[in-house]
Length: 348
Ligand code: F7E
Image (cartoon, rainbow, N blue to C red):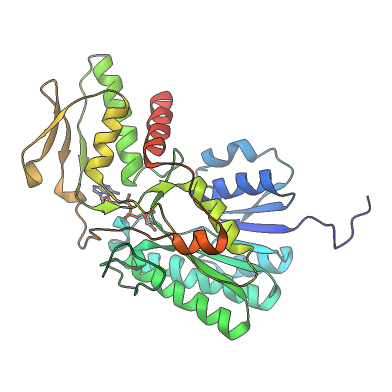
């Protein structure tokens, strides 16, 4: 068949493609569409391509060097590719680090979004743009569950940068009539989650502890900060499907994606141990709280992991996404934990 503009495969740019969300997004689109995927990768002396190594030989998956900190690179990418979709999943996404590197967090998570929007406005005004938004924008919440009308009350430089990005996405949408949206996504995890996030830190360390227990080797306990923080955790795979649904509506509307259930970090730890049949118990309070098994300390508190300001509770209402997009999450909290711990036990 002769290729005409009409039947040429569409082009999707994904930033943050080596990360959890970017790599699942690429997997999803390679499976569900015939579109060409352009994964933007930041130059680094050591590559971190683990999450996309299974895609490197796929002819529909192309890697392009670019950086959200560099407006020229973003401008060139959009001008040369003229994408149909631009999915911005790159970020300084670690809330805890955002107090140490607040300027860099703003530069990537807020100003970086302007760089994308400017390039799209100039070179590809019909391109549909998605920016990763976060429940951290809501911060110190007024009510639960939170819906799309909840005010933005961030508690971290990260949350403030994402809130700023939300405003600028709206400004560009309304000023230039762009299809530009920022979903509001609650915590989402998977075996591909970065190691500094609490879920992956827990499953990876517990897999190691389990191995040490089996081989009767010495081990260091898992050390955590605030284990009473409550989060609404989902599987990242469910969310990339939701992002794609948001991008393909008639009108550029923004939705919450969440599970509608909240759990403490402590519950996450307990369920992980339970999944591998370790029946320990908690002793002590506050910074002296510990999880003990066979007279060994498996988990303890390290106050250096406390944050200068904490978001105590997040719980999202995903009713609007269900009603208007038909989006429904498919992977339960228990299955998420099971998948993460099984993966880490296998790879330890
Ligand atoms: O922390 C507490 C910590 O770093 C979860 C990002 O994807 O989701 C994520 O942000 C909770 C917090 O994720 C440790 O204080 C206790 O209350 O896994 P996290 P996060 O900050 O909720 C949102 C939606 C995003 O947008 C972000 O990009 O766990 N916690 N002890 C700990 N957290 C970490 N990381 N390490 C600890 O040792």
